[in-house]
Image 1: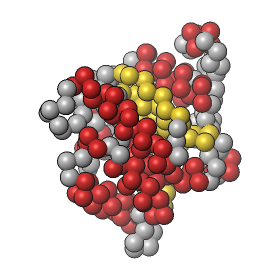
Image 2: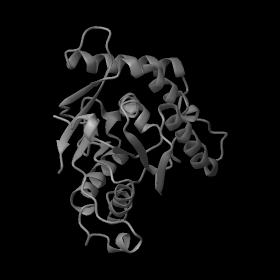
Image 3: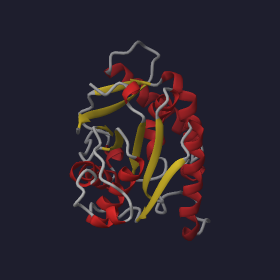
Image 4: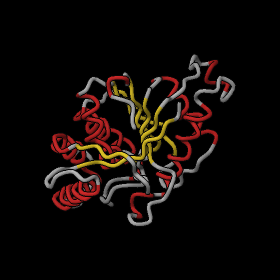
Length: 239
């Protein structure tokens, strides 16, 4: 079972791209913030390999997507965003990535981390982009053992980032979810946050319908009443 929200002061959400949080967990993040949890984002890439408008110069995409992510985060109440700037589309689970995520963890000192699963979902292949899997691998390695080990990445301690142990991880896009969060009341905020990512949506209505449909399926799997909507996670104890 997850920690009660009353025992969580701070949470860090780690994602590969701008808009990953909005698709996978924006309703849950909005609910956490409403309950009094302080939430920060760590976005591993700037999403500069994304978008559909061929008229926009590639060199401008990173700035556009950062701005969209800031706007989307503000919708749910998040203002602390750490953009790591790793390469979009060719992300690998490297020691540099583990170090950078460890820095975010040590800086924000969360009781809860939310990140992508490092395991592929074969029934929904788009949920398991290679960048998501690499981010999940690196995030789990950062939670254990890196962030809690004062001898891992010694340069972090020299920069003032002391070791920190994260007691709980929530993984989105997991093939084996074990926790379902009813976010029906947060739907409007989730959709509003998603719509901030203007550069990514060719058909906004189709995107909204796809999101609603998926959340309804998740709610049905969770055994929630018809008409409810949910987001799914695999929650693991990492204390």
